[in-house]
Length: 312
Image (cartoon, rainbow, N blue to C red; front, side, top):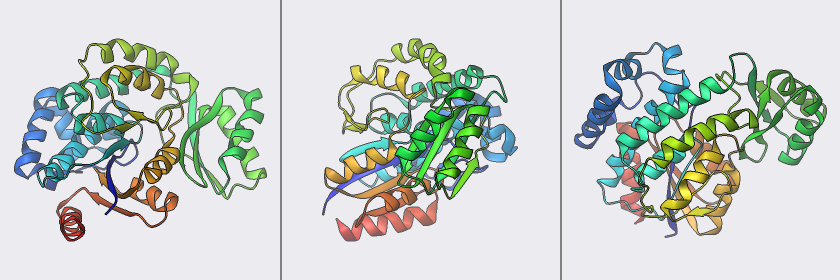
């Protein structure tokens, strides 16, 4: 049996009513209660009932996904599962730090609410955009972005998997880069419904503003290494976390590189904890001969636990 990594989803995986079954478990109830006490009744109402456009607001989406992810983690942790590594996609990196014991759930909820607000404020609506480029190697997408710089700032926000890259920046520059990418042979260029140009240089100010909040936390060393988005390397010490998370706001998410690193360390089982199965799909696209399972409700939990019981 190889090694095990727990991975946590980022923005885009949310849906109204997510996590309800997990929140009904004894461990999930505890997590839910902390969410309610920390962010209030209105936040819980949006999580449970919507409307969807309110849940999609970055300052609501981020704590909502984190809360659901930690409910999933607690359910798995209760079974005595001890991962060798943790990783999270963008916002998911905060869930990873909570699971690894580097900060409390309450601290994380307040930080990601603030992170969401700062990211919303960083670029006025309509000024920034993001798009997914499919079927074109990352080097070519980088070239398309460089060639579109005459229209403004644009660069790679997420290296998700081979043939799936997300770009981010000023609206006109993103549009131009999409056109060039298609000329280079991209299969599709899909504009994303997001409220800002995340993981682009337009977010530098948001990252720097976040620093003072991150510095208020007494970060603990993670109980297993976290793979950081900014460089796909291990973080083992609490003091390295702040700089990494400040940079993360305006840097590309090296997700494919993080998965390849984990594969090279002998990880052959990935558990995605939180809403959706986006990351499980990216794992399967990136690494051969690995198992990717998720936990977001009772049926996925049952399947996951049965697999782990059998294989370990």
